Image 1 (cartoon, rainbow, N blue to C red):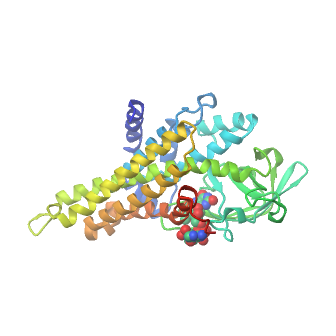
Image 2: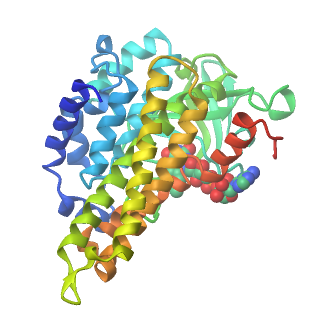
Image 3: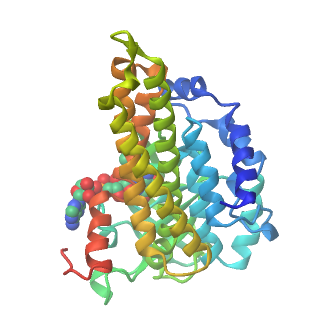
Length: 381
Ligand SMILES: Cc1cc2nc3c(=O)[nH]c(=O)nc-3n(C[C@H](O)[C@H](O)[C@H](O)COP(=O)(O)OP(=O)(O)OC[C@H]3O[C@@H](n4cnc5c(N)ncnc54)[C@H](O)[C@@H]3O)c2cc1C
């Protein structure tokens, strides 16, 4: 780990120290967005960390982004409400026009605008992204958008959203992944868009979106029409690596809490941590979290060197999500009944880390990627 990251980690810990467990518990109970936390993280520049300096960001690399998100989750907080800006911004940065970048990125870096929403998933298509049915049809200087999206996070908390829609019907394209386009939707002036919040297991502001003849200016298309799937996939490696880093942060938090509790809690006249039945699940979870952390580091450094990292990004996400879930269960078991008590934060963090078995990509789909693209086994679907 570089010295720079150590300083960065200390800085993140300092910000997080102002947002203790009680803050997150209260938000969780009320399902409220962590406005104050997001403002504090934006003010010190951490949410714009990956935006190049020429656009007002910190110009840091992905491994620095991983250090930031890992420390957030390790502090007992949840980076989920804020993390998307790091990777959605990448789609704009890598594929947007110079005009779009100079108009939006400095404002995002300053916190004047939030780009926290990323709309891909649809009720009918699910994991099969190339089957999405939301269409964007060019009419003069606008695209007209119709369709539905589901479980799109932070729409009500964002000014801007990246939207994936079909611009050429599936029947007219040679490859299913062609004919999809990415748009930057200005949510402040979006007419024809209905947002219906959905309550989910953890405090994650998530909504269903209905587009009915919604108009998006043609100039808001990102890159070339029909190439959107490629742009989105391109950002997915960064997303998977950053979320894997959050899982490592969660895993380390669970292990610290479980170890502390095992040492302090006395039953039958001695600490429960003296029993190997209590020690071993924590020790095994520790081993798996540390192994996953190495894969996250490897994937991030490949990404930062511009080398292919699809396999490593997927492995990192799989291993880290599994390790944090294992650590969550070890912590819950160690806390016994207290683990179910909201006052100890274990149950909240367990719910938060459980998401990463399913979103942004489910464990099965990663296994299928490894089987097909790394091991060369036949395509199964
Ligand atoms: C809290 C939350 C926030 C979210 N935020 C966003 C967001 O901001 N933007 C966005 O676009 N999406 C978001 N999502 C959606 C999320 O990415 C999807 O839920 C996820 O990709 C899975 O898609 P699905 O729910 O349609 O599951 P389905 O596709 O219906 O799959 C259901 C299950 O079947 C399995 N499965 C499906 N096909 C196969 C197969 N061929 N082989 C083996 N197993 C298979 C899957 O692994 C999964 O476990 C969010 C979801 C949640 C819960």
